[in-house]
Image 1 (cartoon, rainbow, N blue to C red):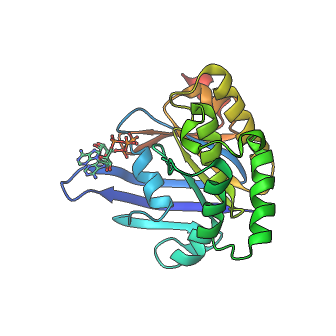
Image 2: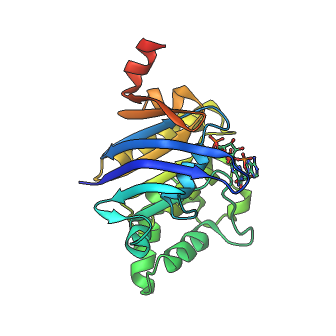
Amino acid sequence: EVKITIENLNKVYPNGNHALKDVNLEINNGMFGLLGPNGAGKSSLMRILVTLMQPSSGIVKMNGYDLTKDREQIRSMLGYLPQDFRFFSHLKTYEFLDYAARLAGMKNSKERKLAVDKMLEEVGLFEARDRKANNLSGGMKRRLGIAQALINNPKIIIVDEPTTGLDPEERIRFRNLLSTISTQDVIIILSTHIVGDISSSCTDMALLNQGGLAFTGSPDELVVRA
Ligand code: ADP
Ligand code: ADP
């Protein structure tokens, strides 16, 4: 069981922009979609959830740990694929994942190799393991991005606009990959402005608009209302 609770969350930037307004949300196991137009506050919420930014007020708990107090525990639970994820161009695919595994604290090289090979299989990049990460196709890069986010077996996986720039085939492949992962005992939060990314794969969702929650429920209910 994994659980995130968000209570009365607010973010006001130094210039006065009120990016999140009294957000209350509970997120449970499975794939959760965060939908909203540009400027809605999605990235602000993501940055807070991955502990890159402090909220102005409010409480966020992940499995009982407090986001602002228990940062070490929270970080060890998290996997993150930012929107503009970049690779080190000189590294091969498997070297890049090995590096991610090192960063995640895996000191034993045998253990790392097992984890890296397993992950390459899981995201369909085993055949591409010796290719430079920079030379992979857009879809393959995105899959390598999710692989690095998963290497430490996170309980909570946060992906920001993951299908942007992908062709339809890769988009479906990436969605299916996330669906497979979400059958494990994890939370995946998928932030997007594309309804189709959410309706096909998420059990629950929230709609953010101008920093406030305009809807929470299942994607089917949203379509019925709209
Ligand atoms: P989204 O990811 O949904 O596009 P953001 O969280 O990026 O939304 O932005 C929400 C609002 O906060 C927007 O009005 C944006 O201009 C503002 N904003 C985002 N980052 C900053 C910042 N660093 N300083 C001031 N305002 C910001
Ligand atoms: P996103 O919507 O994914 O957050 P943006 O292009 O809106 O992407 O933001 C890129 C960067 O600019 C972020 O670091 C964000 O914090 C900052 N930013 C966004 N809006 C503003 C703003 N109104 N004032 C200052 N910084 C901003």
